[in-house]
Image (cartoon, rainbow over all chains, first blue to last red; front, side):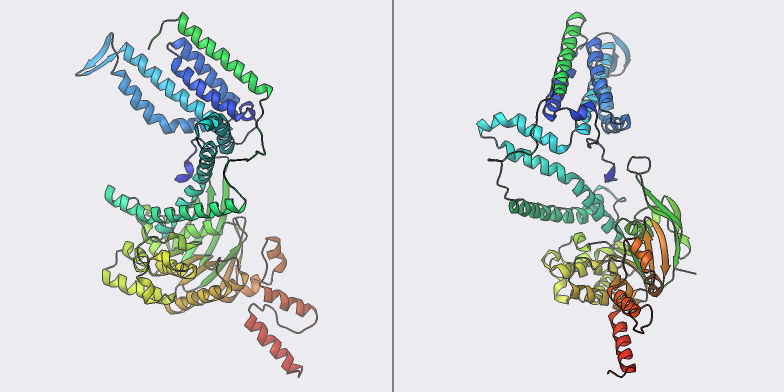
Amino acid sequence: MTRDVSFGQYMPGDGVIHRLDPRIKLILLIAYIVFVFCAFNFVSLAVISAATFAAVMLSRVPLRMYFKSLKVVLIIVLITSALNIFYGGGDVLWQWGYLTVTKDGIFRAIFVSVRIVLLILLSSCLTFTTTPTDLTDAIERLMKPLKALHVKVHEIAMMMTIALRFVPTLLEETDKIMSAQKARGADMDSGGIIKKVKAMTPILIPLFVSAFRRAYELAVAMECRCYHGGDGRTRMKVLHMKPLDYVSLVISGIVLAGIVLCNVFFASIV
Amino acid sequence: MSLIEVKNLGFTYGVGTPFEKKAVDNLSLSINEGEVVGLIGHTGSGKSTFAQMLNGLIKPTEGQVLIDGTDIWAKPKEIRKIRFKVGMVFQYPEYQLFDETVYKDISFGPRNKGLSENEINKTVRKAAEFVSLDDSLLEKSPFDLSGGEKRRAAIAGVIAMDPDVLVLDEPTAGLDPKGRDVLLAQIMGYHRERKNTIILISHSMEDVARIADRIMVMNRGRLEMIDTPKVVFSRVERLRSMGLRVPQITRIMTELKQKGYEFSDGILTVDQAFDEIVGLLKKEGKL
C-alpha cells in the first residue's frame, strides 16, 4: 500500500532536463507556474501547455509516471472544475433549480482543470529529474541572500534534506510494523472510524519511538563527523551554469513573450 | 497428512513496474506437525517473503499454501484466523512493542483472538514463563526493559496467541552469544512442551544445526534442498556456491578427517565432536 507513492519520486536518467542546473530548474518551475496563471485566453493557454508538454517529453521519464501523479489530484481537478461550471456569469445554457451552467462557467472549468494539470506536470517534471539532495542544494543557494536577515538558510536546507531522506525509510518502517501487528491479529480494515483510529495506536507508537531513535542516532553520527552547522562549510559539488542552462533560460523567455503577446492580441476569456 | 503443504508457490514484487522482481519461485514442500524446520539462505534469497506467505501477510502471485488441507486464501476475508494459527516473529520484534505495560503488550494478540479476560491472563503468564520474563517485569513499560528482555517480551507476544506453527525470523540477531543460547533454549523448551511446528529462519548455521529436524535451503527464490542437517551440511561445495557455509565445528571435523583421523561424518555440534574426540583418544589408549 505505502509502496505505491510515486508522486515526486526521483527517476534516474540522463535527459536534457536531468542535466540542467537544479537552481535553474527551480527558478524555471516558479516562473512557469506564474506563466500558467498569466495565460488568460485559449491561445496563450495552448502556448504554455505546449511548453509544458515539451518539458515533459524532454525529461524522458515514462509518461506512465506522469499519469500516476495526475491520478493523485484527479479528484481535486474534478471537484474544482465542477464548482467552477456553476459559478460563471453570462448566457445560461442549462438550469436546474439553483444550478445554472453558463458558457463562461464551462470555459472557467476548462481553464482551472488545465491549470491544475499543468502545475502537477511541471512540478513532477522537476522532482522526477532532480534528486532531493540537488533540490535542497538549489534551495539553499537561492535562499542565501536571506542570510542577511538572519534566516538560518543552511539549517533549513539540512532539515529538508534529512526530512526527504527519511520519507522512504519511515514508509518502509510503517510497512514492517503494520505487518508485525497484523501478524498478531491486529484488525485494521473493519469497524467504524473510532475503532480504526484506535487500531492505529499499535503502529504509531512504535513508529514514533523509532523515529526518535533514528533522529538521535543520526545526530550522534553527524557530530562524530564534526558537523557544526553551515558556517565555514564548503561543498563537494559546486553548481556551475552551463550553456544548456542559458539556452533553457532563453527558451523560457520566448515562451513568456509568446504568452504575453497572445494575451495582448487575443481577447481574454477569464 | 502434513500440517503445511506448499504448492508451486511464487511471488513477484512490483508486477508491471521497472522494479519487478521474482522473490519466490515455484516452491513446493510439506512440513509435518511438530517438526522443527530451519530455513537458511543468503540475504535476498526470499526467506522472509516465503515466511510471510505462510500466514497470509503476503498474498502469493502463484501457487497456494495449504494448512490442514485448506488453502489459506480460500476465504480472503477470514485470513486473520490464519494469523492466530501461524504465529510470526519478525526480525527485531522489539520494535513492535507499543503498549503501556509488558502485560498489556503481550495480551494484544490473545485479545485480538477474542479470548476472555481470564484466558488472556493465563496465556500471557504462560507465555512470559516460557521466555523467563519475571512477573515483576510484566507491570513495567516495555520501553524500560533491557534489549534482551524487550526481545523476549515481543516473542512472548506471539507465543501468547498459542499458534500451531511458530515462524521466527532471525530471533537471535543482535544478541550476545549467551543471550542467543538462552533464547534458543527457551524456544526449544516451548516447542517440547507445546509440541507445535517451528520454522526458524537464521543466518547462524550453528543454531540451525543444533535444533532443526530438517533444513530448507533457499537460493534466489528457489528451494535448493530440504533435508536433515546431516545431509544438507555434507554438501559443503554446494552451500558455498550459494554464499552459505557449514557450522564451524563441522568444518573442523571434516578437515581433521581429511588429515587422517577416524571421525564419523556429519558432526554438527560441539557436543558430538567432543564425544567423537574422546572416543578416538580412548580407542588409541591416550585417555
